[in-house]
Image 1: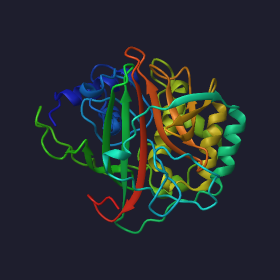
Image 2 (image 1 turned 45 degrees about the horizontal axis):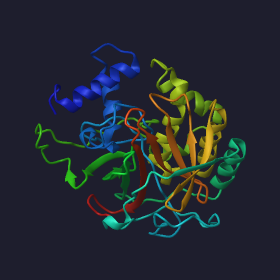
Image 3 (image 1 turned 90 degrees about the vertical axis):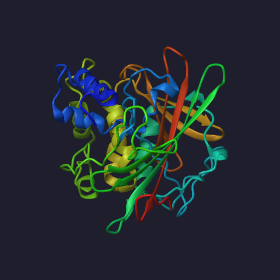
Length: 342
């Protein structure tokens, strides 16, 4: 893509803003942010302002910095339907979930926020639940297929659904192929001719973890907190304002690969975030925990956790200008090749 293409200009501007750099940020800063915008919808469709929101990998055109979410439920290739409430916590760890591609399963609500929950109790339960969630085993050449069902709900009740599909290399979680609302990003964009091509492999890190790097990750929540806070330490809000976003970004992408001890330690970081709040969230009958860091970047972004599985399953936010509520739920399964969905 040309250096001056609109999407790349946007990424470079955000890199400079977040990192506190000049108008010409370092290639490393640009590459880091470019790797995160895949999961964000086209701004022309959602009308969302430029913002940091938790999660994201790969590339999304004209979008802004979102992190990824992962819904991983019980059963070898099935999970709960949207609208079916979670029951008792499963004692059988499970990794995969393959949602139906039919529009009828698209999420069409941003959920209803319920009662506040005791933060310490919620964290303790998530840490305890982590002990039964084992990482998935992948054979050589297998990939992670990621499917993100999303919806923007305007104050008038208009619902705009979005779909993002990615095929990730588990060694670094690099996006090898991205399809946004049916459009293959490897094909020229009709607006400017730009195309997506997989980034080259990098050094294992928080930004590009592989199974071994995750297995070697510290299990000290305080050390993890400092690692997350350091990522955006040069930003205007300071690195601590982004801890929940960075934690969710890692967990949403690497969830199937996390060992129990590391998963528990990551949930332990929640107890170190000042001002963290937890509420119930009902998404068409599916009861989740809604975690929020009120002093987070731009506007609060909710991290969604399924208490029945102890997994980070999505994200939710409200546009402070338009009042539009948005939600993203992410599903993962293991496939043998790019393009396969089961």
